[in-house]
Length: 190
Ligand code: NI
Image (cartoon, rainbow, N blue to C red):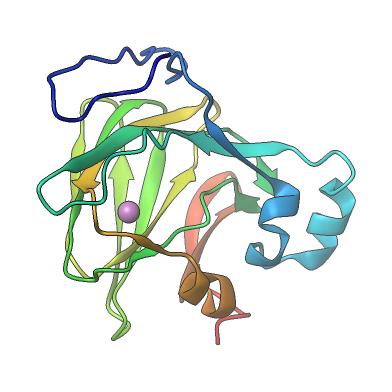
């Protein structure tokens, strides 16, 4: 794909089945986020296989408050131990910026958490739009058995703070217990 000119109207095609565009996605494998899963033995068992957990597009929107960054995110089905495949999750560097997700395919959840510790989980199914309010960290989690594909859009200069979640984790995790999703306290939360 050629360079996008953000000063002009443009279109970009995302495949509704697999979420992919004619551009190289950013990929995250287990090795990129191994400390984010609470079951470290399960991580060790899977680390040689190093599965692709998720991928997403950064189209390079100018980091300007008047622009919008957007793209698709594809979280693959699977589990590390009993914890579902998920994205790393992040706060926005400009905390007071929201984000919209629209679910195109699959079954998932969005885990959200504010710096003060308020948290929420919303289910994502095709056709559902989710408003992630400003100030909330967000992580997509695939609780189904096909790819979870979402389209997202946020203020282009919001920035990403991955470090806070990397060092502290989310307070709550989503695991599978007896074939059903369950929200548990994160034993490693700091
Ligand atoms: Ni975001």
